[in-house]
Length: 287
Image 1 (tube, rainbow, N blue to C red):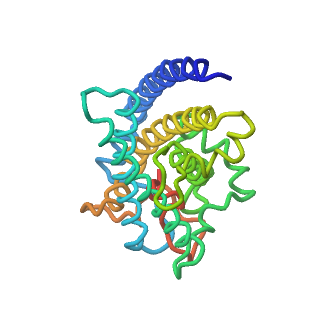
Image 2: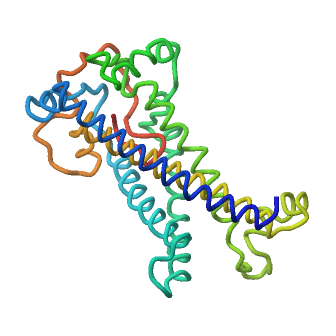
């Protein structure tokens, strides 16, 4: 595929993902009205009947990483979309450097969060393991979200859809970081090679016969994942606020009159001793 064809593909991606995002916003709006008509909004925000949470309160570190990650992802989204669609003149170079800085922060954040999940005293990786029970109850979770069932199964801190989504964020972030750094063409000090040469030139560039063409492929993958993050984050934010607003407040250090580890929506059926927090740092406690 030539650079011209890839440019045309990017235009189609612009149109396709913009249309998809509009459809998603409409769907979430319809879902919100479903929450009102079904009485779920009144039940939660008026009667304070929020989901029960197993385990101790969320430690400071997952909250800190979550807040830092959310801020960085918004900065990356804004600067990335500006780089793609510059809506004022003269800012592209500055936006690229800001984008790179936040890309480094997110990469460090991800490594730190994975270390916490697997090696910290309050490691919580087991909270995200998809079990046989999760698979069995998955249809009931889906039926709950489309208002066929009045409640969803309570197996632990997260349901199967949350576990799958949170875990998916890890490889997406890794690929996004790789392709993002592969777009840097400025030579590094001392070695006189760019990150693109180091990450793509020796294999994909050699395979395609052009390191520049390899960069176009990386740019396309990077752009697709950017839209996936925008869509998934929008859905996550909506569900976090409508399904468990106290947990949403807790993750941002906001005061709440409701104990996010109590509630009446689901009685606890299992106990987990491990800590809480999200494996993917951009995730909240519960949707």
